[in-house]
Image (cartoon, rainbow, N blue to C red; front, side, top):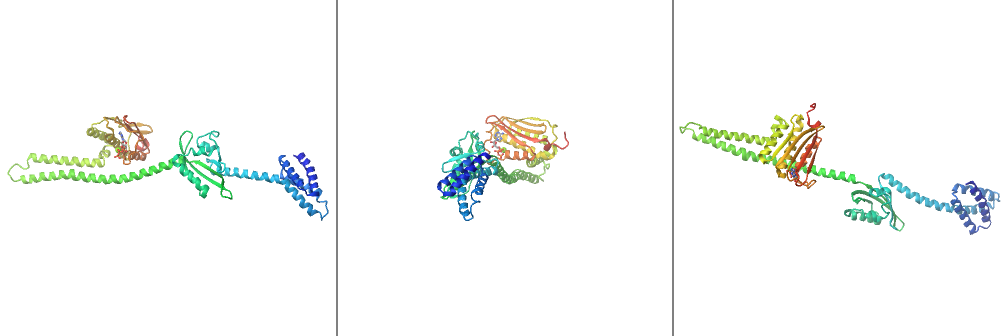
Length: 453
Ligand SMILES: Nc1ncnc2c1ncn2[C@@H]1O[C@H](COP(=O)(O)OP(=O)(O)OP(=O)(O)O)[C@@H](O)[C@H]1O
Ligand SMILES: [Mg+2]
């Protein structure tokens, strides 16, 4: 470095001296050429300043004060030419630096962002390695061509993306879009893309830089949240409706069943009244036994209505006897055998979980009766530490898994809600023609009396 500078020093001194004599264009061109060589030799601006300073000491300082201003001015012009190549290259550096700075800023703005840098004039585009990774490609795999990304945009979102891009480039509206892309493996992912164009004085965009973020997980969460809100809304509307229907049903049963029986009882009693006094033995044995039968029927009806509202047996005898009773009634009513694997002593169920567990089994059996066309049901209630497993499996026609969740189907939804309240979950395994298996997996801590086992 020092020797290169030493050689240049002598050259600079003699060429400046020559220039100060005739101030020719050729002298200035020579200064420019020296500057270019100095730059190639990796000399810096400080080296140039030192060079110039030494030359001034030799050529300008000793001159007469009257000559000095002209010599100073001419030396400065010469020096400026020497520096011109440096300035040009600094401009270049600055532009490159600005570009990388911008990319860096974008990278920092989202560590997970995939960057793109597009020249709308030439259509050249740069995709960062992470951009390609979001699209499922290795760095070398995806060509740096805009079309390569456009082809991956889901057809449903294509119009939206191209419109946003157009309105950004033409009207300078924000470019901030979310859209789906098809990755290399064919998987659909959601991305969030933002970008900013740069326009020249003629308002022609000459560059656009931006990033994409993979927001698939967020989209799925949003979707799940929306779906569960919608489900909750439907469920609570359904609960209202069920309440109304329940009231109507009880009113009807009271009216039709109890009402009629009471009317019949009243008529029987009034017949007794009319029969009184005609000299026969009163009241006759037949008349009385008819009335007793009516009263028995009334009691049965009241029990039936009450049991439907709340299975009293659940409170009196506990969960397993209540479920046993339910299964017996189910078999008697629908002619479907219920094979039970229940160890009544395996789990000491607490009071709080009883009604939820009972309703889960009840709804599962109701579904068998309504949808399965089965001849047999296997009902298991077993202990599998740390869980209690309740399983209802039928040999009926089954259903398509993940099939249509009818807008008006609330049975499974209600079962899931009840299982979730107990900290557990419901799993379903079914196929058309292969029966329907419903499993409730419930933590023992939620269903068992504290301290049992
Ligand atoms: N054991 C079963 N066998 C075959 N399909 C079943 C069975 N259980 C449920 N399904 C299917 O799952 C669907 C959803 O059941 P779910 O209990 O949620 O609703 P539902 O019984 O139709 O109506 P409800 O809201 O009155 O219960 C049913 O419509 C039926 O298609
Ligand atoms: Mg149902």
